[in-house]
Amino acid sequence: MKNRIAVLFIALMTSLTAAPIDGEQVYKSNCTRCHIAMHTYSEKMSRVIVRHMRVRAMLTQEEANAVLAYLLESAQPVPSPNSKKGINAR
Amino acid sequence: MRSLHLALLALWSLFPGLLPAQSASGAADYGGILGGGSPILTGALGFTGGINNPSNLSFGPKFEPILLLPIGNKFLLETEYSTELPVNRQDGALGSLVYNHSFEYLQMNYLASSHLVLTGGEFVTPFGIYKERMDPQWVRNLLDPPLIFAINDNSSIGGMVRGSTYISEGVKLNGAAYFSVNSSNSQFESSRQSGGTASIYLPGPRLELGASYSRRMGDDQLNIAGADFVWNDRRTPLDVRGEYVWAEKLGSGYWLEAAYKLANVTSNPFLRRCQLVARGEQVFAPSISPDLDDPLPVLTTSGVTAGWNYWPTDYLKFSVSYGRQWDSAESLNTWTIGLVYRFTIGAH
Image (cartoon, rainbow over all chains, first blue to last red; front, side, top):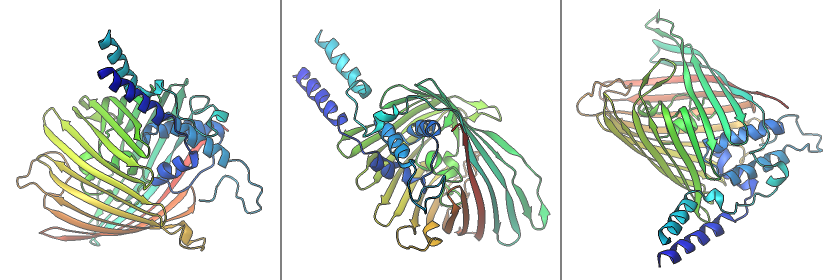
């Protein structure tokens, strides 16, 4: 009986941790709770900042990776005459 | 043998990082946060001025540099040094100039697994939501912290384990536990204490409910408990936070704060960079003065504060606030104004 419960628990954990993560969603539901604006940093800087925030904001590794991917994708140059170098719109 | 299997399964469940990881869309293209990175110097330089009951004036700069140093793929050394030079002018006379400076934290983090971080060194004591999240001058909504913040405005020296995991879809469990030794060094002050904090976060409605506990040992033995919540309404966007703290011998109190960003309600470029804030709070003093070295009100005190924040750029924040506090003996009106510049320097 104990073994069945343990196997069931592991199966549950596996299924829960296999869900896909949306970086934009994680960013909006975690980062914007304290930070009002999105900044654009280089890839090297973004990696360290997200590592720092993983500890501070208690993000899981997967959430941190998703946020990093979202930030780096958002930092790609946008071909818009109104875009401002170094600062993204909120 | 059955016991061994159960023990292994229990160990496995404690370190879910060993399980198949969640997939982060696009993260694989960048290798995740485990790879690369370079040292960063960041932080804030601020100047704050306050006046209460016309005769009392205080002002001064505050400089809080932060160094982030990644080491390998699993470690992060981070430190914040806090310096301030407050000037007080009371009844026409300038007070003595005192240069306050000390480490806020100097910690080594080890990313033990996908869900677990081990920390050693000096770290911000995990209790409630203000110290760890709201305290930095470029993050806090109002320049003055809540009155009960004095109870938990401290750092610890020792070890901490912290982490988070999803206990079901849309329900996240966060937690931290620590122990601290006593240190009277002026740069690394801490008390002998232990405790922890835990919260349930619902990312859907963006609602978080938390509870904290701390036990101070040594000369001033006391128990401290607290409860907190954070709610961000994604539609408005309205941020509401609150915290209740009960401290044996010191008293108890609560604060409730609401912040409203105007970005979603107007197209005016000036107003889109504005935020309105309001806070109400009360501190209930103990019936007998504990004679402990904590700067809490000695009488039961109530207060309300209203503030306005404006970001001319994403790196500059201007704030002004008005607050009124009253107890059974007197009332106090306070105007506060501040400017904070946030900087980040690192390799490109």
